[in-house]
Image (cartoon, rainbow, N blue to C red; front, side, top):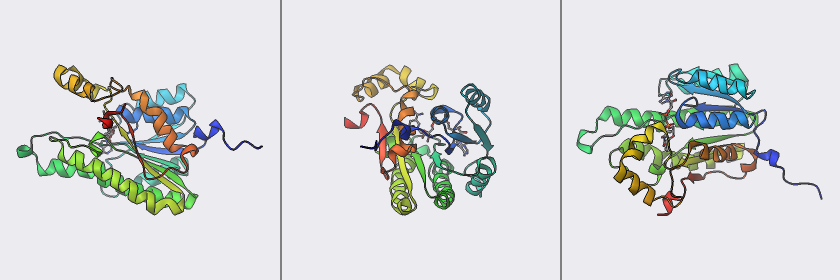
Length: 258
Ligand code: NAI
C-alpha cells in the first residue's frame, strides 16, 4: 500500500510567510519556528527593534528573513506590505497576524483615542492585511492565514475593553474569512495563547496573590514558556492542517477548562 502520510507534511520548506510583529515578543518565536521549519519569513514591524537578533538567528540556522518597517495602522499599509513581500520573495503562502497592543485603564478613565488605537491595530489592520494577502494567495492557488487571538477572545477583561473586543472580533473574523476563502483553498485559523512567561508578564507573575489566582486556574499548573507555542503555529501553517479551517486553537495548559 502506498504511504498516505509523511511527517514532511509538518514542514514548511519553500514557503513564504509574512509575520507582523515577528521580531519581538511572541512573534519572534513564531519567526524562529518557521525558519527552523524551512519557510522564508518577512518580518513586518513598526520599529527595527530586535531585527539584528532575528537576522543573526536566521544566519545561524541557514534561514532567510526579510524586513519591512511600517505602522500597520497607517493608510494603505496592507497593500504596501504585500508589494514589499512580492518584491523580496515573489509570493505569500502564509500570513501570521500577530502584531497587537493592549492599553489598560479603569472604565471611567478609558480614553476614546485608546479605544480607537487598539481596535485599529488588533482588528482593523488584521482585516485589511488578510484581505490584501488573500487576493495574492488566491492567484497562487491557496494559502494559510493565522490570526493571534487571546484568552480575552473568550473571557472579559475589565481594564482592557478594546483588547477584549478586538480579540473576540478576531475569532469572528477568522470564521467569516475561513468560510469565504475556503473555495480558494485558503485556510484561516486562530491561535489563542494562554498565560505566557514573557518579560511583559513578569510583573503579574511577581504579584503573589494574582499569580496564585492565575495558577489555580491553569490545569497544567504553570505559565507557558513561549517555545510551547511553536509547535501549534507550525502545525496550523503546514500542509498537515490543510483540512482545518475556522478554528481557534487555545494553547493554554487547559486554562479555559476552569
Ligand atoms: P509585543 O509588544 O512584545 O510585540 C508586539 C509587536 O507588534 C512588536 O514587534 C511591534 O513592533 C508590533 N506592532 C505593534 N503595533 C504595531 C503597528 N501599529 N504596526 C506595526 N507593528 C506593530 O507583543 P506580544 O506580547 O508578543 O504579543 C503579540 C501578540 O500576541 C499580540 O496580538 C497579543 O495580543 C498576543 N498575545 C500575547 C500574549 C502574551 O502573553 N504576551 C498572550 C496572548 C496573546
